[in-house]
Length: 268
Image (cartoon, rainbow, N blue to C red; front, side, top):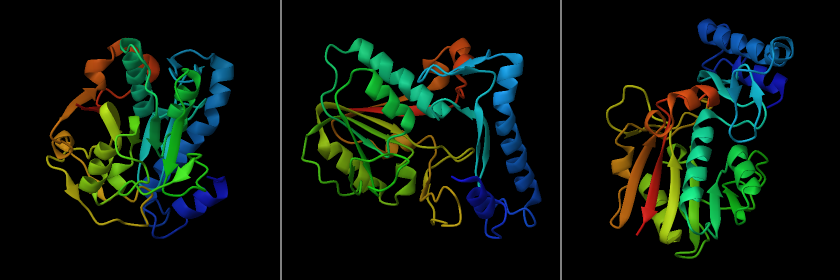
């Protein structure tokens, strides 16, 4: 997002949770995070590019970049090289592990709002063509090949080997419909890679009203029971948590939160 638009929508809009005269504490966190982001290239040049590495693009540097929005500030989570969040770096490690253990690579891959990090991975791992889908075909963030509503896709039954759906489901109120659609398009033996954010301290997932003035515009707050919500007959759901799947040394090197996770769903 252009700098002036970000300032206007985040710090100067009275409806923003980071409006500087209504919410000065949050505004100061955003400004502090932005200043640190601006100084990161100078720190790398002066002090050397040692400390962290991105498993997606190979970037090396002293710190990952901060994520900034009116809703929240997440420190040191974005790769300055390819833009991968720590959740995406974790997913990339999982994909590579799956590819090493498979006799045959997946044939047809569909990514819903596929991140630049995963697009980079799929294009450089020699995999089959990944069709990128988003609700808006003109959205340049995800460079979609076609537009589709996840609740009603134009894809045929049992036509996709792998589905990627990272941080999409929390924006759609009709969760059951989306999961049923993913199940429909997967081939027998197919795999879905699902990621959603978990709300800290929440015991049970819940629907919430969408606030269009919030940057995230979530329709769900998910809890650790997410895996139960997506269970279907004939599905095998595996929750992969970073602290269990990735060693402490690698988590530190790659800047991955130990509580970050994804759900691996296989259709029998």
